[in-house]
Length: 309
Image 1 (cartoon, rainbow, N blue to C red):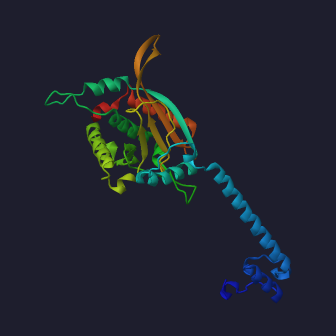
Image 2: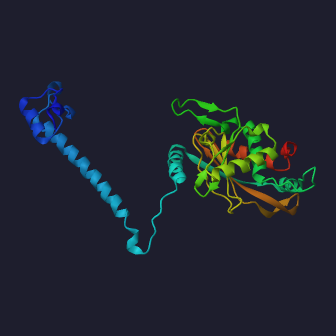
Image 3: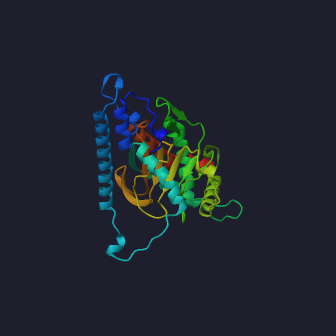
């Protein structure tokens, strides 16, 4: 260390200063035990002792970590591959979301029998051919109507001033798109003002842009709430991670026909699994249950989206 490193700002005797220099200790970082904070030899020894214990603790933690990390090749053939760039980028956002937000997930099922019958009955008025509109487009429209009634779900918590939240007056729905490069979440803008057919077209457009890495980075930010769907793959309920700084995310499973007891008899109905994860700091369980009930109404017999195709 240079002489500059040992410029003394704390009171100490020449002997103590010399002792500190010999041990390579910055005496200004040593807490003095004598009057007016004067540093003596014993203070320097105590400082060195504490530093030594800290170093040993760090080394011990490293050793513990190393015990868990072993060479996989010792146990058989392996292959080393690079993590895709998109997954590397998204990992830090996922870790941030999971560590910052107290997640709770509410599971439910929506009866979409009438919605599916209506969707499958749609035809082109000019050609008479069936109009192929994905169920996700209907879910996006139903979700936007539900957000209108439950504005807390269309908000973000102010991390700087914990006493405030930002309520968004726009409805930009994030769609989790599975790509060969990793998961991407572009936004469908202003869905409240769009017909379902236009939403379906835009869903296809942004999905293609993500898979071809042509999506504008700005389109990955500024959402109201996100939908992540496993319906095309399979599975029912799961726990989706909230897309920070949003406060909720809707997970969609694969719809399934089930026998349901209604009005004294069993009927075969089409049920859609719903997994609603929410930020418990701003949304409680009762509000989440009411949100799901409203969403189910908007997807079910009360399908007002018929007017918005």
